[in-house]
Image 1: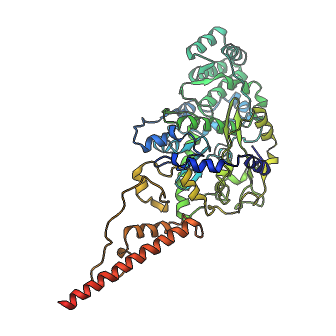
Image 2 (image 1 turned 30 degrees about the vertical axis):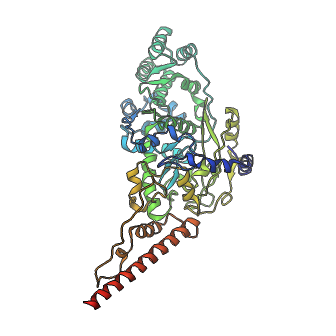
Length: 503
C-alpha cells in the first residue's frame, strides 16, 4: 500500500538487469499464453494453461448459500435493532439463490493472483472496494480485524461464553466438524433456541454468525462456518467499526486465487458478490469493445456517492484513487493493485509497474489502511483523465497475458469489435493465390488477399492506437499487401488483353 512517491521508490529498487532477464526468458512463453512470463509467474499451474492444452476440467463446484439466507429471513423483531447497529444487515437481502456456473467458471479461468485481476481480451478488470461498497452497502472504511489463529479449546470457550451453550454440546459439535468450526444449521438452531429463551444478545450473535458463514466468509465445506468470526461479535456495539467490505474482498480474492489453479475444482467466498460483479464486468467488456472504452460508472450508478472513492466536483468526473499494494484479513494478505485497472475509475490505462513480491506485516497494512488519506492520488497525477488505453498498453498486455482461452477462439475474430490476438500458435504459411474478379466486376475488397482484409479489419477495430509503433507496422504491411495485389491484377489483366487481341 504505497503513495505515488513510494511506488517510484519500489520501481527504482528493481535490479537494473530485470529487463534483460525478461528478454532472455521470452523463449519460455506458452502457446496461447504469455510470451513474456515475468508477470504471470504461475501460468504453468493455472487453469487457463490446462484449458488451452485441451485438458478436461470438471464442472466448477460453487458454495452458494443464498437459499439458506432467504429461508432464515429477517431477524426477530427483538434483535433487529442489534443486527442493524452492526452494519451487516444489508447482507440479509443481498444474496442470490443459485450461482451462474458458466459465467463464474469463465471468470475464474481468467483470474490471476499475481495481479489480483481478471485478464480479458480488453485488458485487466477487477472487483474493487468501490464495487463492494456500491453493491453490498458495507463499510470499506474502518479497522481491519486481525482474527488471530483459533485453537479448538479456545473456540469451545468462546461458543460457551457468547452463545450460552453447554460445554458438552459444543465439544460434540467441534468434534463433528473436526476443528474450530460449527455447522451453519447448528448456528441457526442456537439462534432459534436463544430467541425462545429471551436471550436476545446471544440470539443476535448466533444469527450474525450464521449470516457471515453464508455470505462474506462462505468456505468450500458448504456446511460449516469458522468460529473465529465470533470474535468480532463479542461487543455488538463495536462491530460496526470494522471495514467489513475489505474483509469480504480479501476473502473473495483468496478464494479466487485458490480456484484459479488447475488442481482445484471448487470456489468458495461470497458467490453473490462475484456473480453480480462479473455480470457487470461482462457487460462492460462488451461496452469497451463497442465504444473503445467507457468502463467508468454512469453518474446515476451510486458508485460516486462513497466518500472514500468520490470524485471532487460531483458526478461524471474521474474519482480519486487510493494506491495500495496489499489488503489483509487476519493471516490472509492479498494484492490490491488499483493502478492496473484505472479505466474503472475513469482514467487512461497505462502499463503498470512490474509486480514486486515483498512481504508486508498485518500491522503495517492496518496502519497504512487507517491512514488512507495519505495515499490518495490527486486527479491527473497518475494518468490522464480519459477512459481508454495508452498507445502501448494493449501490445504489452498481449505479451504478458492470454486474451484467448482456446486455439479456436484465437483463430476467429471476436464479436462486438474485440481485439484479435497478435500472437497465436504458429500456422503454416498461406500460399493461396489472391482472388481475381471477372472482367467488368467492380473493384472491391474482394480483390485483396485474405491477409490484407484481416489487417484492415484489425485496424478498424480501434484496439491498436493510431500513432503507436504497432499501428504503423500494420499500416505498412497493409500497404505492401495492397501493392502486391494491384501489381498482380495489372499483370493478370494485361495477359487477358493479350489473349483477347490474339483471338
